[in-house]
Image (cartoon, rainbow, N blue to C red; front, top):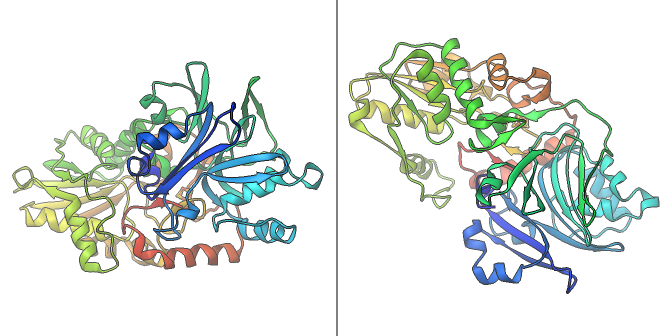
Length: 451
Ligand code: SF4
C-alpha cells in the first residue's frame, strides 16, 4: 500500500481474516497509509489473509464511511471488497438491488459488487453476477475461505499477481511486489477471475469476452515508472514516448528540462533522440501534499509554485525545451513557462508526451469537466499563446501507441479521441459531471486522480 500511495491519497484501509478466531478485523481512516496505520493497529490486523485499499475520494474529504475496503454480512458469510475503477451502470444496478431489499451503507459504486455477489445463486448471485457489471473495475474480494481478484473484460485498470513465501499476492501495480520482495508472476488478464483458497489458485472466465481497452493514461501518467504493466516497464514506455515526441516535434534548443516527476522519463527520451543536454532544473518539494489545495486562484498559483522551484543557473540565457506528461487546465504549464522566463530562459518550447486532452474520462480517472480542459476549449495556437511558450508540441495518438509496442486496438484513449469503448447513458454522464463540479475545490488543478 505504501508503494501504491500514488493511486490514492485520501483514505486507506485493511481488512484481515484470522482463521482461528473467525471474523474480519477492519481498520480504515482518512489520510496516507503512514497516517492511518500505527504498529498497534497493524498488530490488530494479524491473520492469514487480508485485502487493502488506498483511495482518492471525490465525495468529500471527511467521508471515512466511503473509505475502502467495504465489509458486508451476507447469507453466505462475510465479504470484503476493494475496487479500482468506475462502474458505468452503477445507478441502474443500485436501484434494482434496493428494490430487492439490499441496504447500502455507502454512496460508493464499489459496494454494488458486494450486494450483487451476495444475491442467492438462483437469483443471479455468485460469480455469474459479475457479468452485470459494466465499466472499469479491477477488484479484490475476500470471503470467509478465499481471496478473489478480477478485471473487467476490457482491462481498463491494471491488476497483477505475485508470490511471496508460498503465498499469493494481488496488487494494482508490480512496484508493490518489489517493496515486500514478492516475485511478480503475471498480469491478471482482462475478464479473468482468479480464486485463491486452501486448494491453491485457479481461474474462471465468467464475463462475455470484450474488446480490450487498457487505459493509455496509466502509461502516460498514472502508473509508477518502476511498475511492469501489460508486460512492459512503464519507464521504458515513457522514454519511448519522449523519443517519438522528439521525432514528431523537433526543436533547436540548448537544454531539455522535465517537469517532475512524470515528465522525467519522456524528457530523457526526447533529449537522447535530439542529442540535447538533459537537466532536471525544476526541484520538487515533496512535503506539500494537498494542504494548499484551495478554491481560490491565488492559492492555486501559490500551490503550483511551492511544489517546484527552478535552478536559475541552469536555464539562464538558454533555449529550453520543457517536457510535461499532459496539460489539463493549463494552470501549471503556464506557471512553468512564466517561471522559466523569470529565471532568464531565452526561449521556452513546451512539449507534451501525449495528445491534447479533450474529453472526459468515465472509467476512473478524475479529470475536471471537459469545459475546464484547455484543449477542449482552445485551438493549438490559442493554447500556445495562453501558455506564453515560443512553441508547443503534443505527441500524436499514433506516436503514443507506437511507444508501447502494442496494437492500437488494445487501448482506451477516449480522453484523447472521444472513442468510448464501453457505452454509458446520459444519467451516468450527469452523475459524473455533478460529482466533479461538487468536488472541484478538492482537486489539484493539474493532477488527475483516480475516482
Ligand atoms: S478515457 Fe483516458 S483516462 Fe479514462 S480510461 Fe480511457 S485513456 Fe484512461
